Length: 304
Picture 1 (cartoon, rainbow, N blue to C red):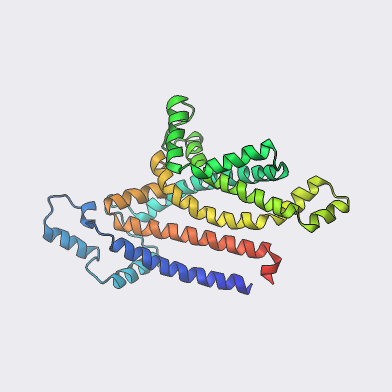
Picture 2 (tube, rainbow, N blue to C red; picture 1 turned 60 degrees about the horizontal axis):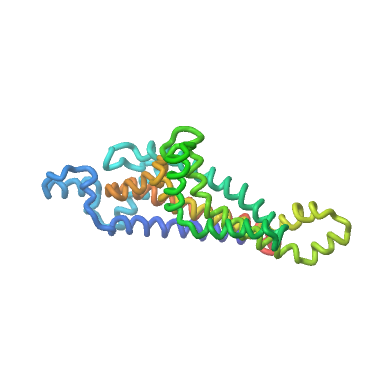
């Protein structure tokens, strides 16, 4: 438990440092924040008055302390472009991103782990070669290119699925598959490698000598011993899904966190950028923390 507690403390410190880094990066990124709210004909005096009203004339550290104080109390501010409450935007956008990200992670492990097991159990056969080739292709193809190909094939040519937007179950299929493509490929390779490594261990030969069936050996003992790298991969996949979602949501017009963050950056909407950037940092960091805790709990040697 001591190692888990130390990792929680280090994660909290990392979140604090990351929040300051993100806040400062947004402030020093350049661009005119008044363009998000004021017309092009606004005078320099009016623009300067607007900057004072939103606190941009104060030192960066004071701005950060004020923002974090409001953040802790639940005051997330308003969007500069639409004047909508960020808390209201967050509920809708987070829900949509959870639908897409959760569907993607579910596909990754429901498809990747079984394929990796099959490749390991059929090593050096045409089945193994086909699955391995698929995984190599999945890691090599960029997400944005795969998204465009999927839209052209399944939406424009075959008319099987919608090309974008949010309109029911069908609308999530294409973006979820594109978002999960690289994750499936990586999961296949890691599962295959872990299974092959454990199949050659002494405990497998001992179980066979004791009369256990091959099915029980593979699915109960070998798979269990192969879970450690898969658990580690789960934490990394959270960060990758967050990063790739910025591209996938924008291409498919999915109204999630990635899309609103990209639009906010283009419009210099500071309050929206700050909140959703910090949100992504928190999600990635907590994902890595949960993977680290799961790895510790699953590995008796680390618990000791």
